[in-house]
Length: 340
Image 1 (tube, one colour):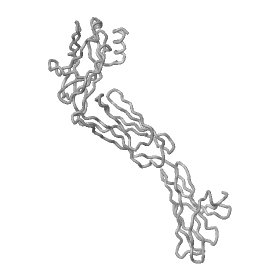
Image 2 (cartoon, one colour):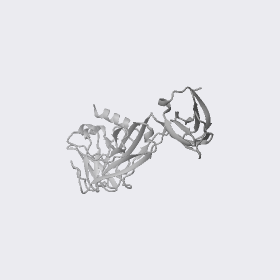
Image 3 (tube, helix red, strand yellow):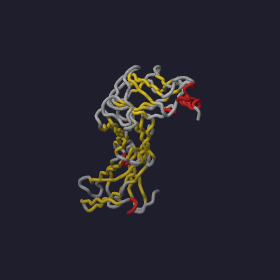
Image 4 (cartoon, helix red, strand yellow):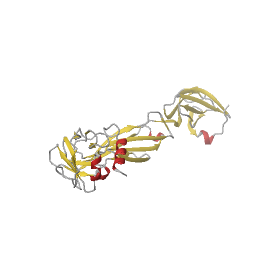
């Protein structure tokens, strides 16, 4: 691939960045704003006049200075624990000048190409401005905007800056509800957590944690952000409880209560009495007071919300003189009934 063709592709990818073929330009973000205490990797590309294309050879050296005529920053193969330095990560013959900066402070930094021929050029018109901002930020957590229904797939996203390529930010999820993937792109890391919605997760908090390496302290720093899950599900664990009016006897009354776990909450409660092989609807509401008979004191409730319905267990009370014995049976297993 010729140098001119490479320049054409580069300019096509960097539209709007002022790129023109046949000019000496260095291209990167106008202002780089890393967090305090972090090293920073700056993606960087450059273009050259046509007369210099043949002079761009593997023996060329990248040079960075702080200030146009300031000191040259040491180019180290390993990161430095003290003093300003850089590690060159690009490929000059591919017009790539990507560099990681260590222990630098606010200011303008200038790039120079120094080759063992006539190509020795200071890119003085396009300085890199580094301006440190506040401390490392909390990750950004994204969640579904629509209602999440039990049984559907849920996707949560978490992104955090990853300014220093030798120490990429790591994103973790707590709890691990499903499959998570992580993607590093430019100076940002993004993680996606995918799981199947369950009523067991409703109301639980899911945390996304960004693990940063803080060069100034030589250790990892963790920052988290949480989201409370809201899962819609049909009624579950529906049951009936009862307490006889005092004294409990034939012709007396029974207080029944129907409870269920659902989201959204139950909107309709319907009560039924089992009369032989028939089912009689006898009332509505979460609580009901009914008259007791010598027989047919079998009851259950049915509940409804916007997602589905569920029937409770069967509740029976036996009348024995002025005393009562209360017990419950499963509607599905212990009583064969027909609905009319």
